[in-house]
Length: 245
Image (cartoon, rainbow, N blue to C red):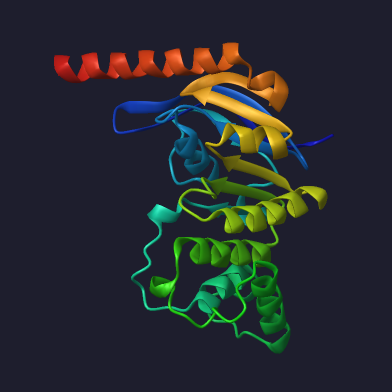
């Protein structure tokens, strides 16, 4: 099977503090992978590097999924919901690459927007301003936008955090449908039981790579212990550096 994404010796960070160290991994086309690790392990940083929000310090990122064929969902907490725009307008932004900044939304586009809204269960709420939506409703809107982007590589940063169980189940169904369609999905997750039930592959990291492969092989007690102790060692080293400075 061909690779959708390759990371080779990738190092990323903020200011003078590396958050991901020399990570190498290959994600096969059509794979469904959970990215897990302790808090501060560099999971969100890794996704930001893949989408180009952070400049690489070392290494390279290759794959047909970069650019127009890639869709990225940041953490819900990172999204400014004070802007006076409706949920439907946010969903329509998923067509941006197709129609451009100044293109018109035609009837065929509107039907696709309505279909995406139906798929995520937001009918009847689409005209509400995003500031009036609950966390779960907003996440449904963002998933509908992803549906319209029609990307082959989809990156999700903590898609299930701070939303209700019903929404988690509904959005998990969308993710599994992407997997059945042969799309490549990477999702930063915290619930290891959820990972074990639904995600065939896992990348376990603690700023550096701990394990990457079938979930039952990656999420062993030994690997989880190593991830925790490695993360603590990085934290201790960072604290020493701050005191020395």
